[in-house]
Image (cartoon, rainbow, N blue to C red; front, top):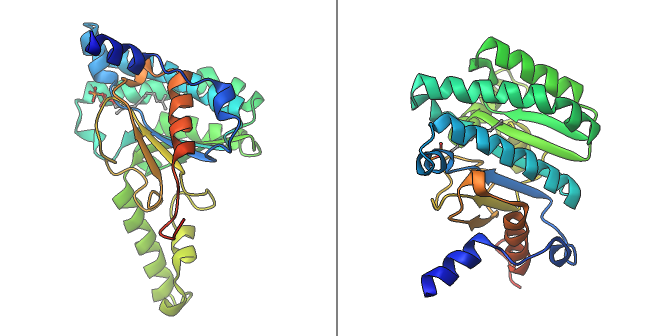
Length: 255
Ligand code: FPP
């Protein structure tokens, strides 16, 4: 009986949009969209079907963020480690991204969404790169919601790239080591110009960051749920924000 109630409340969050609009919202939310594969397996479907359902969830979450007035959303779509997956799955993820852009670009543009990718895009297939470039170009002027899609992204690689970039400037005599500060460093990250994430959401029960925005998450509040990404609903997002609003952020200082 107890487990029934636990499951019921886990699946049906009780928080509404009105509850979270009373307090200030996290300006930047990051999401590790995990559990597509397990969701598919439970339904006896191929893993690609889980990713497809995950893309639908992403569509809904983007709309919810627009509706709430959240200005930044970063989603982890493909990590530098995801190349280890079978070629078939990697290809399915790439095609899903292309499909997502083809299907959604018009609406995203209309809704004021600026698409920005972070990660090593140059290593992706040529047709994916051209779709991304076009989507970024076509939405560059939008300001309502910045949708950062982490693709072939790794937090360690991002930090390493920043170090290399800075070192080259130092070697060329264009930057003095004494002048390198936190701001200089941040200007060399893929996320330059985007504020650090306030809230991280990870679905599907894993309790780790998996190389996601390692530098930027120094003071990010973490929120985890057992719910698989394809089952994630706007109400789960409301619940995450509601819990975030209850936390006291001190950034290393005192209350
Ligand atoms: C993790 O679930 C999810 C991914 C590696 C990919 C996330 C991609 C999407 C949600 C597709 C849509 C993205 C775009 C940008 C269109 P998993 O496969 O590791 O799940 P598992 O741990 O249950 O196997």
